[in-house]
Length: 181
Image (cartoon, rainbow, N blue to C red):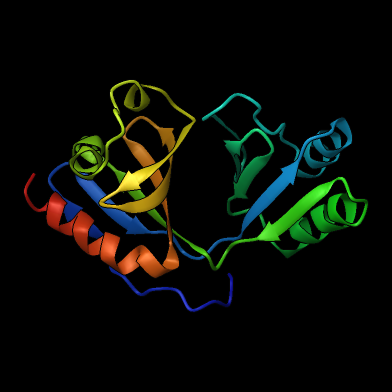
């Protein structure tokens, strides 16, 4: 487990919605463009980085989220110091791209249940109609005026990434919005 100052929040249950703060896990930002970057990253992660906008790739306990044409967030239970070291050594040191540890920048909230998109729709301009019926999709949007990244793992199961400095504000808003379901 990471040794960072992480918020202490209890799991919350609402009608057809469960909110859970995910334990601190490594989150790495990868940037690169050329073929050698993709080859090295794919070999180290055992996963091909998604190149289609707003998609993700998941294998075992590692997910790679497409953020822009040359940027991905990699996170999961199997992402750790060894993987970070390997990526740094094979990508950054060889000037193929960059690897940045953003673990303490982002807090991860898991939202699970039939009312996930009802709550998200209350505070976001994004139209979730197509998003909610597709697995392994990613969207960067605003939620109650806060920048978030959403990763839908499975039907009605969303990982929400929010910057640590906005976490408490957004957590309280989600709780308030969920209490009116």
